[in-house]
Image 1 (cartoon, rainbow, N blue to C red):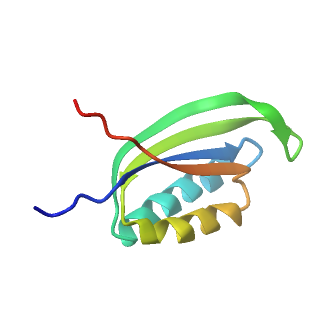
Image 2: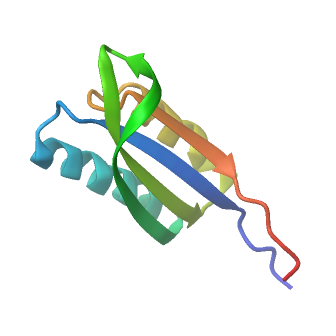
Image 3: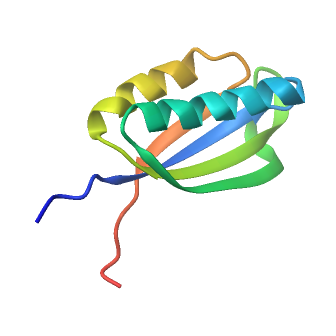
Length: 102
C-alpha cells in the first residue's frame, strides 16, 4: 500500500493595510505553490479580520486564513521561506496535522 503524504495546516495572517487585490494575489500564489509542489489543498477557510495577541508592524489586527493540505515534506521549506519574505504577510506558520483514528 502506498504511503499517504502528510497533512499540514497553514495559518496565514494578511496585513489589513494591504489592498484587497494584493491579499487575493498572495493567497492565489500560496495555492499555486502548493499545487506546483505536488500538494493538494483539502480545506481553505477564511476566518476574516481578527485582533492579534500582539502588534506586528504597528498593526493590531490581521486577516486570518487557514489552509489544510497534503504535500511532500520537501516543499514546506520553500513555501515557508516565500511567505517570510512576502510583503503583506506579517505572520505565517505551518503545522503537521495529527490524524485521528476515527
